Length: 482
Image (cartoon, rainbow, N blue to C red; front, side):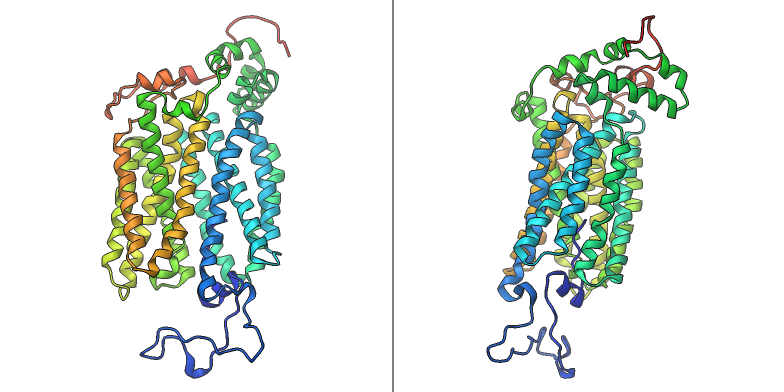
């Protein structure tokens, strides 16, 4: 559930405040010498009519609440990543849907700001579990050729949510009803998640061969290969994934991400890329009211730019490669954010165009990063690497609201920080290798022996996928142990 900062009345209701009634000669912005007219003083002994008192110096608590939401996504990514390796991707995904539905609905009935912040923290925690589990399931359940397409397709569902949310916010101005409306559907998603199959790779390396074989046969039936699925035996399954099974017996930790030179470089560069993407993305997403354009219309544009951005990203990923797509996306985004410093506020159209362009580039960066990261980290520490990457993007998104407070000192400071760090993230990705048309690395030694030249001859799809495919045909006679 993304954060929306609505204009005027809706904004006041979102943060728990009620706007005062101005008289006809107190219209904001009408007086030449004043940019804001304070509300009339309350009667003697009476409290101002502001729920949760988010005014004056307490106004910054809105940014604190948003930072706590991002802190929830950060901590959730760390904890749920480990739980996903222990108990499976599906249980974490199912429980995250239920927690998001419950905490989001409860936030709508919060009696105080502190209670509201607790529930928003839990919302962030659960969203992290959903994003992480779906990304890993996508990588582990689809073929090499379709990974980029599926990753982009999932991103379009996020775009659809961005289209839907402004309409809901316009139709439901009361923030409590809006919060409840966007939270209740996750109860249905919780029920639907029971039909999502578990990752076969995880089940095999966890020793759950019978269940993995049952899912494989069901998938074969859905793909019109029921006879081949029935012929599949457990011995074949173990033989096809014997390397993954042997690797699963070894224990790896976060320290292994820094153990070898190439893996160390991958970790540092990806960490900066993830941090800068989350840092800059949420700076634009939470600053839509600053561009002088109708908020609901601008939110639609922000959602609409994802459609061409993700389409161009998937074309670039599949033809130019992950390396150049990722670096160009971040460098262009950083340049557009820095350009906002030199555009005066009386040119809202130009400012909006730069912000929309930057947001599109950052959306492309997210689409590429999920795929690029999962292909750079070896199988033995892929989940750990994805968890650390998720941590850094959440640190960036958590820092973004706090950095915006520096505008109280100088208005250009936030954009200088956002743009500069985004350029650094784009520069860091220039030191990463290309993964286009390469099979997933299985061990740390695999990535150490990679050629780090970006131009690598294209391999045949059949050969590159042979080591990662579970064949649906028998390799020898034998009884079915199931």
